Image 1 (spheres, helix red, strand yellow):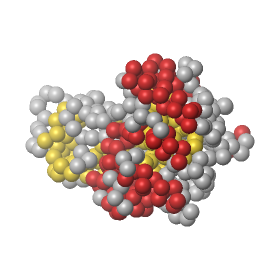
Image 2 (cartoon, rainbow, N blue to C red; image 1 turned 45 degrees about the vertical axis):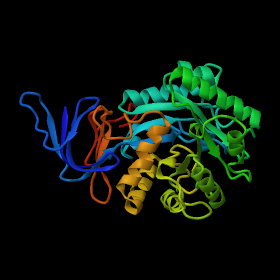
Image 3 (cartoon, one colour; image 1 turned 90 degrees about the vertical axis):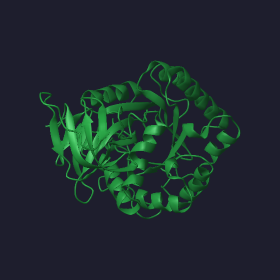
Image 4 (tube, helix red, strand yellow; image 1 turned 135 degrees about the vertical axis):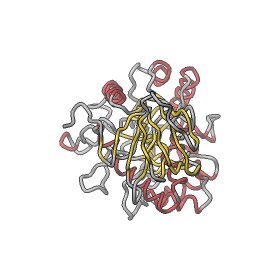
Length: 376
């Protein structure tokens, strides 16, 4: 067991100074003045009043690597365990992008299982950019029902020259399979949509919702901060009840960095609970020096959001909200008795001091204590 003493706890709601007792898997107690009973071998960590909150939940990561759109040399390698843990991430949703040819759902599932064996919690979306989409069993519906880790379909591309330009009937069919599969398989049932720079923007999604009975909460359009026109359209969509995902790691320019977009949306009346952050790690990122997204992009933007909007808002957007969208809350994305023992303690300047996953220390004083199979 682990006993975390004197932690300034965020659930993400600010609870204040308290203690947290962890079993190897679960949060057992959250209250001040917990004292270990003699003979139980409880390890005590004094947090010294540092902020403590849930580990981050990243709903968009190319764990197999992405890219490949400029030929084989442009393929991005797989993401390693330590990269993810050093970014304070405890739960990852793996997905494919434009390349569903040289990378497939079987390999994605195997990678997700490997990361889970090494200490993370993993889920995945079935499919890739195009429709009809790639699956494991031959149908999105069957993947959701039979494959435990599958929580939805994605990232299906709209308003992008690389998409298959799905019409309304194709999007309806996909959404029906996801919705029915989620009901039969007791899953969240997410349709995770890549939104490109195309002139139609969110119009295909808005038309689908208007001309069907599908609930808005099952759709998560991502990359919404890639340009200001799309972000403005997204604000209208979210004020009407929709959900938006901001992509980390973008620089100022035609688009808007996620922390700036986060504040911009809230200043225009978008509810905090309708905004999430994700890394797009392993995907192509023209703003990055090496042309790729990294798990650390999410951490950096989480920290920037915390400095600007406060820790409670940042933890809500980067942990609680994605956990809710994925059907994992309150086991993930919160610090509550009975929840999963995935949490982190912050150091100075919102650095990662401790990361604890499934009740075990994964990062200590900013150093990863766990190594993946292919890491030195």
